[in-house]
Length: 158
Image (cartoon, rainbow, N blue to C red; front, top):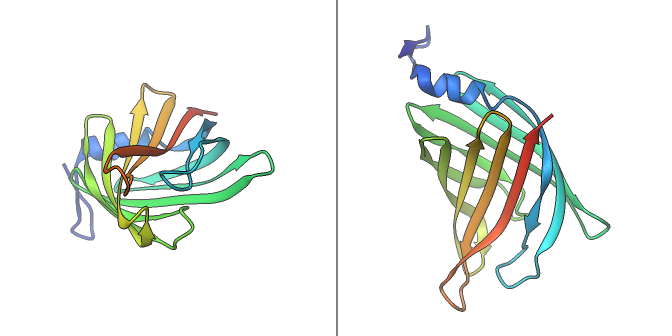
């Protein structure tokens, strides 16, 4: 555990985990604008910046001429708990909150406006080995009550 001059406590393993995610990431994935929408293939590129207690992801995902969206997430760690914001769903800034388990940050999403019948979803940021990240968002289909993967983006370092 480290204590900074500000009096903020940061756990060493959290700082190392965050530091390991810094860099440029690119890859492909799928996006569904709504749970009932068709799946769209996307190509994405992100820059991850970190401090011992924060992670910011800034990037863009595109799909031929159909889709181009800037995406960003900003998280602050307090121990293994995370809180922050996400921009990318087109509804305004969404709130994020959750914690890390192993190599995955599990986050609840609170959308700025109703999406798919409510304002809640789940997002994970999973570090896979030293050179891969998987960003996943899961929402509930209001018609069926089933969980639907609304985005899944697999990224590689570099």
